[in-house]
Amino acid sequence: MDFLGKVINFVVLVGGLIYLLRNPLRNFLEGRSRSLDHALREAKDSRVEAEKRQQEIENRLKKIGQEMEHIRREAETEGKKVQERILHEAKTGANRLKLLSRQEIEMLAQAGIREIKQYAAELATTLAQQRIQSKIKKEDQSLLIDRSIERLEKLYEKSSPDKEIRTRTHQLH
Picture 1 (spheres, rainbow, N blue to C red):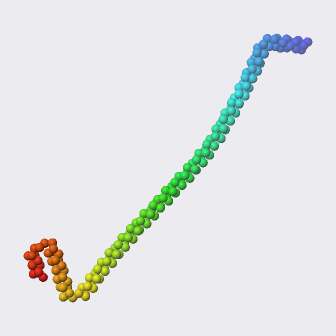
Picture 2: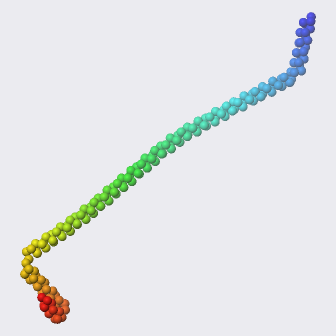
């Protein structure tokens, strides 16, 4: 009996507790259920938002990769253009240098030819003078000087009729 009294007492106590705690427990469990649902919805929304951001970041990374590839291709193209321009300028400069070198060589050659001609003329004049001097005798030299003086007198007479100068010239002769 004692046991039965304890069981009845326990059932009444649990029943009273359930009766008294039913509304607060229901409200607590409903609130907890709502907060869990709300937390699950927020987690789901956050996950969807994170996935969207991840997709945007991946798209940006793809775009950046494409932009980098585009920039690399443009840099290569620009580099080739610069290289071609430099090669063209170098060829132009080399051709200009060749032309200037040719002109300088031609001028030096012409100057050398002129010097050789002048030297040859001087040698020929010296040689001719030596030959003439060796062939002309003293009497021939005097005769040539006399003829030259006569010619000068005739030219002088035509330009000025002053006889006194002519006579002096004859006397010297």
